[in-house]
Length: 130
Image 1 (cartoon, helix red, strand yellow):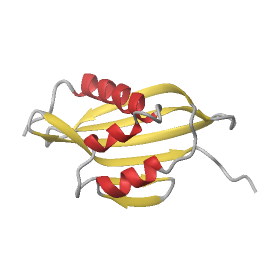
Image 2 (image 1 turned 180 degrees about the horizontal axis):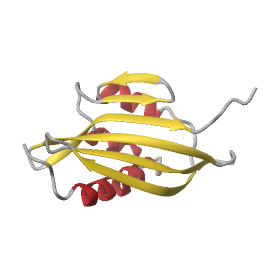
Image 3 (image 1 turned 45 degrees about the horizontal axis):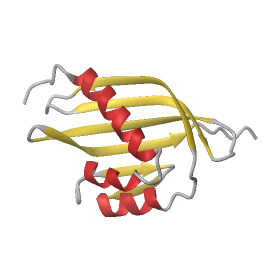
Image 4 (image 1 turned 120 degrees about the horizontal axis):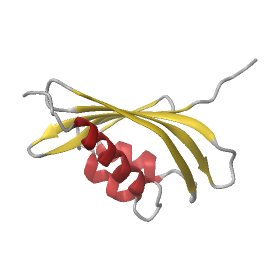
């Protein structure tokens, strides 16, 4: 496969769709369609998960109901297999907690005329300052 020339539009569109689903507790279950049953990986705050079932168990177990998200930047790069690497930087506030910076990285793997999330890494930017 070749580099996908639409990688920036794909990255921005994907991020918009992903967070629209994630940020609404009633829509979050739709994220299952974006992960592969076996070959998707997620690292969520250091916890390693593989496969759509395990990933969705984690995401649907999150207890917050309200999310206020500000996306600072979405950077995308084309990959040699036609996939897209996406890096997101932003601020996130859940329920009444204070807002925190976060980063999330996705690797979208092409399958036919679409993509699935092959890799997903999420981390709040919390620093221990002891």
